Length: 292
Length: 112
Image (cartoon, rainbow over all chains, first blue to last red; front, side):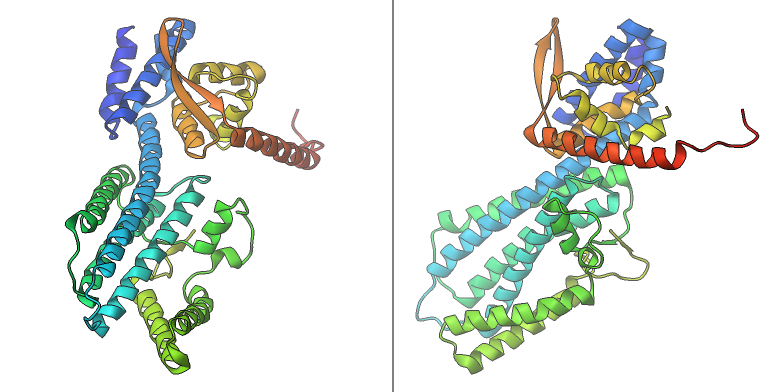
């Protein structure tokens, strides 16, 4: 291989931020490509046609950062599911005579639902992003959703311990949190690369309805439905959540009065969660925010 | 044709030249060039990120293979990729016909 191609590959390697197998694969493919092109057009023309090494490296880094972020979504959901399993083991091992502490019980349901909502948002976004180009603000949002999913699952397990104290085997309790911590580390790793490549990213609002339509292949023009966000997204969610909480409570023999109280608590939690976390999770806009 | 003009279509072009047989990156580039009579000049450095995007979308799959004593990454179309090519080809025909109806008969006075 000529010195010119060697020098070009060295520049490309220096400009790449991604490490590991993805880096080695890219450099190997570029090397073979430049060998072919040099044989046909000469090394000078081959490297000219390939383009500026900094731009080429950036294009590849962005793609790998997107792919890793999407993979981290899967890890994050698996982590949360593992914690859910450990939480069930904890609840089943609880002392049946112990009285549940109301505050811990409310926190338990609030954290569990937040984790589930974050998981759904992250999965919808990651699935939609398979078919579209990713911007740095989208990746930053996906990382926040990915971080929140196992983090709230861990808080749910903590709250479960407060609701119903008891003793269970560490072999049942520990795997969930361990897997969740590994998932969090994976998300942080993907986030680090995305930040290094994309720089500081602004906050973005991203409608889960739009992501759902894109994910099932109906993306494109759907008027206001695909752009539902903020209060327009919250308003239809309130009666659905209230009805679900009422039905759940009635199924548990709560009676109409107690079930209505449960439904009211559910609505309050939903609104509070929306106010506190809605902006960070890309469901409502703050000042100067864009909409995807 | 300029690189900027081509950029939005690169992924569909790559899928189209994978329909008949799999190939490595440089071979795909040569197929695009040959089929277009040399009119389409692909920005070569953007080829591999584009192929990875197609892999991310599940439209192509790739494996390492030995070819002529060299180790090459060979790309092949998935069944989803095959469906996408058909859709993209139909959309392109509609688009090109519409643009042609608008621009095809245009004459600019005062220009040769």
